[in-house]
Length: 239
Image 1 (cartoon, helix red, strand yellow):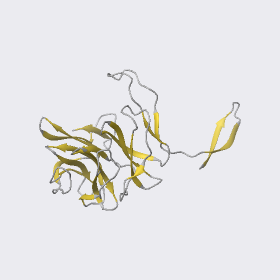
Image 2 (image 1 turned 90 degrees about the vertical axis):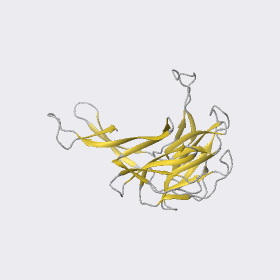
Image 3 (image 1 turned 135 degrees about the horizontal axis):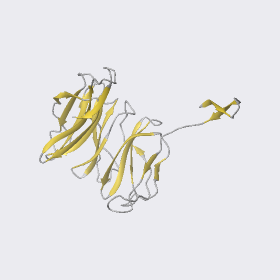
Image 4 (image 1 turned 120 degrees about the vertical axis):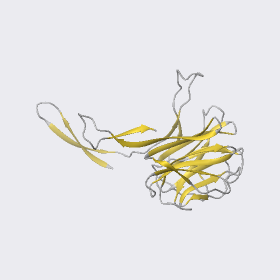
């Protein structure tokens, strides 16, 4: 694109120039040089093409791997490192049969029964979807499975709960309710019906198994009135 920039050069002298630019999000990776994370190495470019959004990383068969959306390809992408530290990376590829609806929404890469799996929001099948690799490295993938049919399944988070994959998300069509759904088997081939929690979520959710039970951290907007602030001011808080 081209934009105009005005800059003062002193004494009221203002000039205008045109700048040609192309902006894109590049997928990066950085690893600490010590176990405590007090010092860090140089960032590594993982994928420089495709305009990457909404990444999720996991250790896949001993090496770091990343799933992300590519707005250039309109696909869900997957890439795995060539070594255990992530110093070099292979070539990213589109996970077969996947397409995403909203580049700003979350996705989750998790190891399910020894193989990588991804929860994401997609167009086909419509709504919240799940796909699992056919091998331990993620070189080939199965077909997408529809977990929940809805227009927007925002900010999902996946974890293995009591031996089966499960997903939390918030449903914009159902009064922004936070929801939870768990697979009917260890591989995620079938899924149960979503459960609506009696709480409203607006941005992000994070699902984990805490002391044997599923737990979700999420953000919710509440309205707080203060003497120096208008009544409509909203704050995002952890609930």
